[in-house]
Amino acid sequence: MSLDINKIRADFPILDIKVKGKSLVYLDNAATSQKPLRVINKITEYYEATNANIHRGAHYLANKATEEYENSRKAIAAHLNAKSEREINFVRGTTEAINLVAKTWGRKYVKAGDEIIISALEHHSNIVPWQMLCEEVGANLLVIPVNDKGEQLYEEYEKLLSEKTKLVSTSYISNSLGTINPVHDIIAAAHKVGAKVFIDAAQALPHMKVDVQELDCDFLGFSGHKVFGPTGIGILYGKEEILLDMPPFMGGGEMIKTVSFKGTTYNDLPYKFEAGTPHIEGGIVLGEAIHYINGIGLDAIYAYEEELLHYATNKLTEIDGLRVIGTAEKKASVLSFLVGDIHPYDLGVLLNEQGVAIRTGHHCCQPIMDQFGIEGTCRASFAFYNTMQEIDALTDAIRKAVKILR
Image (cartoon, rainbow, N blue to C red; front, side):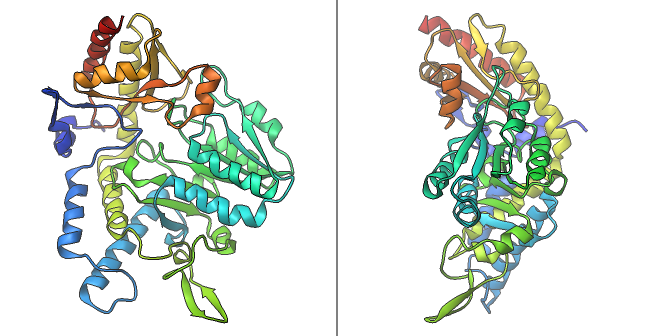
């Protein structure tokens, strides 16, 4: 199945805007994706025709909002192939999902002398919460090393595993380099020593099918704004038997069954982890975004974006002095690069003058930047609405900027 790119681009009105008098070339999708009209219209529709607090209401709007919110949960459960929507917890994003697990499951089960394993490729949000937990309980944080291509060294990972390992947490796809990590093998090996596994799927959900039962991961998190939905909403998936055994993350309304001054009984899943009035609009609209990408087809999206990445890699490496940072055999939709000794920010500013939007800096991944001996990179990241012509525009813009900066 091939994609009708012109039809798809017509779904994204922001792609028609002008920047500095030039057509926008948006190549910052790893930071956040743009939103299709279907999603934008659903936000408006919610506030025009649905807005009410959910659960326990007796009136029409409350019932309608509740139904749409829970239907979205069911759609997300189906999208991930979860066993039940009880395994789908609405959170603010991947960062909150990781912190929730660290501060509930982690505090209950990780003790002094235990070990948590992450990799050198991780986003700060998949480093800092585990550091905080280890400092709090006296556990040790171990790191899977990465080679010069930006690939996790699986054999070294196997050496780190032991009966002390309580949790392994890794990204499915690196946000800074685009490396697709061997998560199936990582999960299977961790389970052999009795460890649980958290998969940061923030960069995977927009680009590929993710089946939590096939992966057999214990936890998985993703962010709505990466997958063409709103900001401030995301999902924590957890196996039901594990979630049932975890204490709540926050206390308040909705996460309780009964409250008295003698004590409180907590609500059933998934509401135990959803204290207070949630981001109702975000939850409903995230389901709409999931329906949108399923309508296009994730297999077709993945295949097309592979073509984009291959084309971009060939085009950019023709530029004198440009080097790609992260050359893993398996990559997805991210191209990090430097040109000579030009500072990434300077290059990014001059690309913006030509209407080209990329990301510059360390991408919240300072440890891997330190390994490469650099402060940061220029990062072009692609989505299914990007085109080969936009990659040509990026290439031309880099050449023009380099002439000015040299």
